[in-house]
Image 1 (spheres, rainbow, N blue to C red):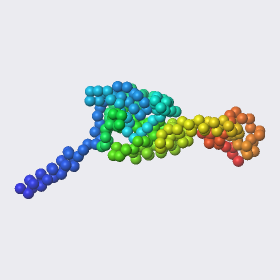
Image 2 (image 1 turned 90 degrees about the vertical axis):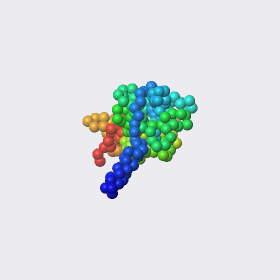
Image 3 (image 1 turned 30 degrees about the vertical axis):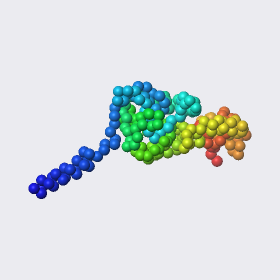
Length: 231
């Protein structure tokens, strides 16, 4: 009898740990209705067309009624569109918190053929980690790590310093940066011979160098593939 009770107890424990535990990572397959933006698509879900807002990321806008089109917004939209329009399978994964936002959009992690779109956008620098509202934070640490790598590589939105900030995107930074660059004389000479070399005004070869391109900062020159002269 005791062996029977032990077996029942073991079965109950296994059932509790495996069978009855909430499967939070279940995915629901849906069909695409249409792409909308870098971080939003519309799908057929439960028999009706519904918008899906990608959890934990934010892409620049393309047609916001107040903000209009933001830099890299079109690139983000085209990237997401290419993924969902060519996908064989689109799946949604919900987190443990609310499945809808205040606008009635579904909140989900979105997968195309097994790849999560949020991760792909962050890798390309076409989105920032944003709208972190617990308990919908399952992948926030993972997303932060991807974003840091994109920032280090200065890809996409991270090409422009201070364009992407914690409170959103700031196109005015780009305008002021452009005005600053235009207002100051660019003095660094770039010369293309067997190698691409740049010369600052304190370089011994500066006066003799024929400038084929000019740079305002050494960082600009290095990013364009030029190196300083060997001393």
